[in-house]
Amino acid sequence: MNPPDQFEGTFNVTFRHRVLFERDAFGTGTALANVLSSANEAPVTTLAVVDDGLVQAAPDVPRRIEDWFGRHTTIATLATEPIVLPGSERAKQGMRPVVDPVIEAIRQAGLCRHSCVLGIGGGALLDAVGLAASLAHRGVGLIRIPTTTLAQGDAGIGVKNGVNIPNVTGGKNLMGTFAVPSGVINDPTLLTTLDDTHWRGGLAEAIKVALVKDHVLLDTIEASADALVRRDLDSMEHVLKTCAHLHLRHITDGGDPFESKLARPLDFGHWVAHELEARSDWTVPHGEAVAMGMSVDLQVGKAMGLTDADTADRVDSLLRQLGFLRTPCGSVTTSELLEGLEHFRQHLGGRLTICMIQSPGSPIDVHAVDMDITASALDAVLAGR
Ligand SMILES: NC(=O)c1ccc[n+]([C@@H]2O[C@H](COP(=O)([O-])OP(=O)(O)OC[C@H]3O[C@@H](n4cnc5c(N)ncnc54)[C@H](O)[C@@H]3O)[C@@H](O)[C@H]2O)c1
Ligand SMILES: [Zn+2]
Image (cartoon, rainbow, N blue to C red; front, side):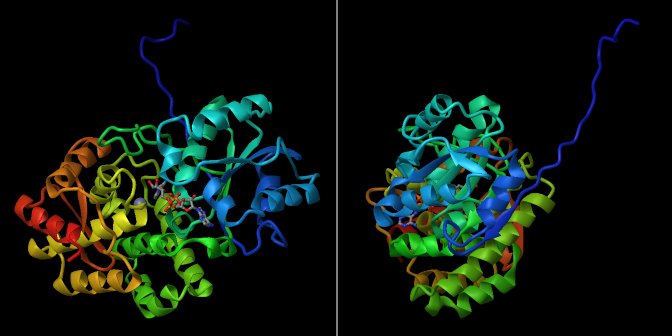
C-alpha cells in the first residue's frame, strides 16, 4: 500500500518534576542519593559544576561534594573533580563563560545521555549549566542544587534555562531551552553565606508568587518580615518551600508547562526587571529588579483603577521593610525602561500581555498600559521614591 500524501500521529510524554528540601545535603542527607539512583543505572557518571561565588564564600563545598561521592560509589561516580565556573550574570553572557566549558567537559569526560550534570549555584549559573546539559547529546540528565534564596524558591524550580546575548538590549534569556531536571535539591544551610542583597532576593519572587497565587503567603511574609530581615533560616525555609511548592504546582497543573500561551502570570513585574538588569549592565540584581518591577506595575495598576489601593500600598511598604526599592540604578532612564514593553512583547511573541494584580491571589492580564502613568511610576522607582 502506498502511504498517503499527508499523515500524522500524536504522542504524550510524562515528566516527573521533583523538589526535595533537605538540610546538609552533602553530609547526612539522602536526597541526592535518592534522585541519582532513580535517574539512571548505577553508578551514574556525574559532572559537578559549582558557582565560583559560592566557592568564594564557602571554600569547602567542592571538597564536601567529592567526599559525598567518595561515600556513595555504588550510586554515582564523579567524572572529574568539581569544576568551578563563573556565577552571577557573568555566567549568562553568551556561551563562553559556562555553556562552552560544560559541553567541553561533558565531551572530555565521555558523559552520555545516561550520565548526569549536577549544577550547584545561583540562578544564573543554573540557567547556563542547564542549557549546556540540554544541548550536549541533545540532553544529558540534570540535577540542580540551588544555593541562593531566589534559586531555591523560583529559578531552580522552573523547567527552563538560558543565557543572554551579550551587549544587545532585549538579549536577556534569548538563547534557551525547556528541559525538566531529574530533581532539584534545596539545602537551606547553603544560604547562610549569602550577602544581604541575595539573602532577600528570593523574597521578591516569593511576594510575586503570593500576589499571583496565594494571599496567605503574603500574610506569612508580612508576619515574618522582622525575622526574615534578621536572617532567621527557619522563616526563610518556610517561605521558600511555600513559594517553590506553588511554583511547581503551576508548572505541573497549570496547563502550560512550556509557556506556549500568552499569559505568563509568573512574569509579573518582569518586563521592567529584565530591561533594568540589562540597562544597568547587570549591576542591579534580579531580585532587586523584580521588586522594582512589581512596584511599578502595582502603582500603574492602582492609577489605572485595576489594582486596589490597599494592595499596592501594602506591598510597597513590605518591600521597603525587607530592604528593597533602595538600589541605585546608575544612569538608567525612564525612556530606556519603557522600551522593555516592546522587548517583553517580542520575548512572549504575539500580542503584548502583562500580568497585573487586582488583589493578592487575583491576577489579570492586560494588553495595554497608559504610557504617561507608566512613565511616572518608572520615574518614581528610579528616583527611589
Ligand atoms: N530559569 C528560570 O525559570 C528562572 C527564574 C527566575 C530567575 N532566573 C534567573 O536567575 C538569575 C538570578 O539568580 P540569583 O538571584 O540566584 O542570582 P545569581 O545566580 O546571580 O547569584 C547571586 C550571587 O551569589 C553568588 N552565590 C551563589 N550562591 C551563593 C552562596 N550560597 N553564598 C554566597 N554567594 C553565593 C553568585 O556567585 C552570585 O555572585 C537571573 O539570571 C534570572 O534571569 C531564572
Ligand atoms: Zn524572576
